[in-house]
Amino acid sequence: MLPPTQQPDVSGWRKWLGRALDLLYPPLCAVCRVDLSDGRSLCEACDADLPRLVEPFCETCGETFPGQIEGPFACPNCRHLKFAFEFARPATSRDERILDMIHRLKYSREIHLAKDLGRLAAESFADPRLAPALAGKWPLVPVPLHRKRFQHRHFNQAEEISRVLARHTGLPVLKALRRIRATGHQTALTRAQRLENLRGAFAITQLGLRQIEESTAGAILVDDVLTTGSTVDECAKILRRAGYQKIAVVTVMRG
Ligand SMILES: [Zn+2]
Ligand SMILES: [Zn+2]
Image 1 (cartoon, rainbow, N blue to C red):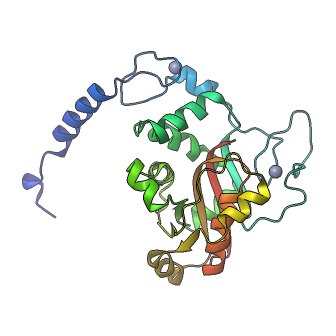
Image 2: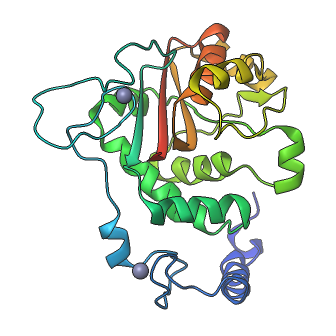
Image 3: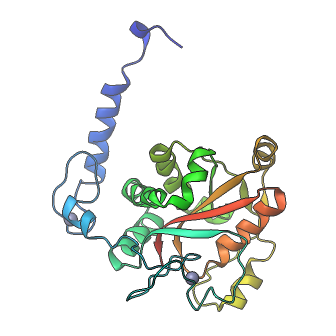
């Protein structure tokens, strides 16, 4: 480490970079397009209006349920399924504005949106079920992209969201998984087809194996959206097989 007088002037450089980025991405609210400052991508009003997950919701997948239910419940979808993860905790319920931000992050490379999407995802950690993960410093494991898709997109949205989550929670990011087989788009597939399509698609990394030697308590899988849960389920299976005792899932939105 350099003595303070020899430290490069990072703050000036950051400001310059910030201005350059403002030129590239004019700071407008991603939803209502109002002018913004401070490098945010959501104005306060739009941010407050996004539908945070409120009870009652399925304790396994976060599907919300209109009406009154006392205590934890399982939605009709999860009631008959056995997942390799303990529970998935999306920060918000389904919302077109959030989905649009996620699509713009993924397909239009609006990487600046990861900051607010990650901040939203961080709100999931208010769920008391995630307290052991925070206390035990469980690693954040992004759902990996296949190398080919990564080369095309140049970044992995789940990894970008994980990095922001790491800043908010103090948990480390761990690239414990890699995708060893391209799986194509799953949107049009049924649950059974998705599971078949995903079989053997992921593997544990050397980095993951090394970390598991330190602690097997648990890991948190991170993705942008939870839809059927097939992808995170397959990832959770691999992490469990590698030695992790508990897997939780955190996403920005329940799809
Ligand atoms: Zn707005
Ligand atoms: Zn459910």
